[in-house]
Length: 213
Image (cartoon, rainbow, N blue to C red):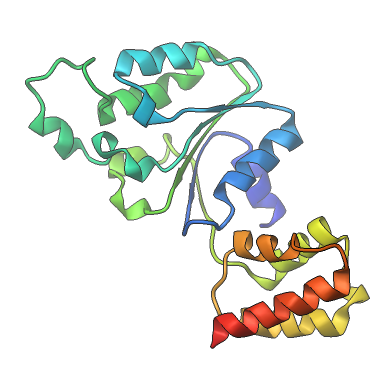
């Protein structure tokens, strides 16, 4: 992720999307740690109605990140067609797309500055275009499978080892990552299985070879 992208995701409403385990939740945690912001994890499945959602919004503090994970799993906000089917119900009886959009649009006006709202999804294509348009979700960040650059960051984080210290071993990992798709979470899991750097890296290489077969 380049510096321009890092700056953009720290400003407004963001959508992180990609396969499970590619680091969407970890990126939120990193943002909060970097900014020293509190994190509010809003599970829409636990929210009964639009009015409850508004009350939760009012309860958040300045310098906070509001996170709504797996937005695609919340059927009521996937499409405006869902609302058309339930027009006879009171607007506050359920979570609706309109309620969620009002939630986003009112975030800045009702709560002041220093708020970031982040949505995550494994299936961006399931979301209603009204939710994705510029002005609502200003930055869309695709979290993909682990690249070599991503591996180097993980190796530095979990093993405190740099490329120039294990150049030959890193080269083997680099070639393996060109051939197979593994998530950053999977790589991190392998790197946390021991403390001896050489043994961990060799075990990682063997694991990658098994994945390729």
